[in-house]
Length: 51
Image (cartoon, rainbow, N blue to C red; front, side, top):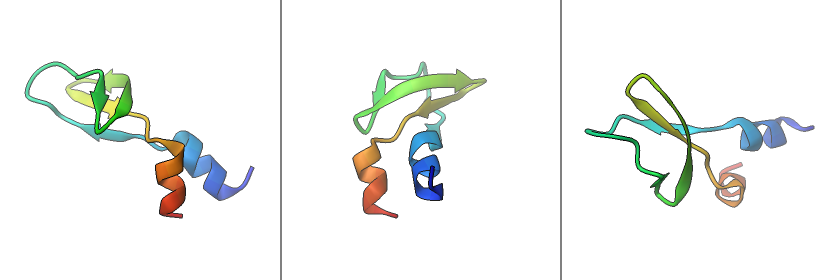
């Protein structure tokens, strides 16, 4: 596995909403929560655009 593949498969975005975590954020699926932060999995095709 190349470093680029590792990044695409293991990256996530997070933010802290005012209330509960929405099921999607910018069309990316919710994957988990830690304390008050919600984590979302980026779309692989979008990650490839920036590598």
